[in-house]
Length: 136
Image (cartoon, rainbow, N blue to C red; front, side, top):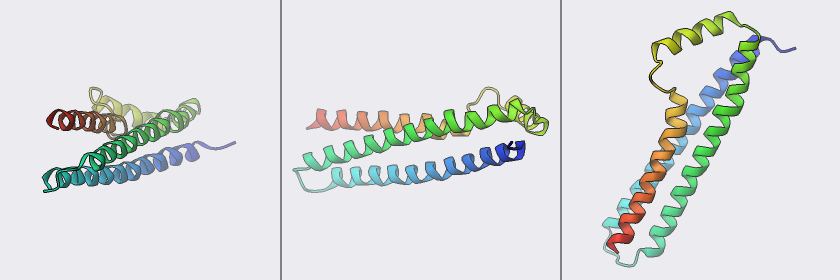
């Protein structure tokens, strides 16, 4: 039977993995935004296919980012945290209660970076695409 230390280390590992995944996706989104503004500011007039491909790629990357984080946050981390609570790991439960009471009105960083931020990027790409089509 696995001990509670295993699950605690598992949760810490997944938190670090989520941070590195989110960092990679943030870099990708910044590259997509830079590419978009370079395309818009270029002298070339026929950018239709390039812009549409850029919007599609950025939107697909956002959806992948959202799905990967949702799976990691709600399945893997949730399972490990439930196991820790089932084992009544007092140190973990005490730390969790202290952290939750300090910021009970803010969502966790994993939710902000992994769920909310990709959704905001997806909405911004859709809005930029609509503005592009309206100005065309």
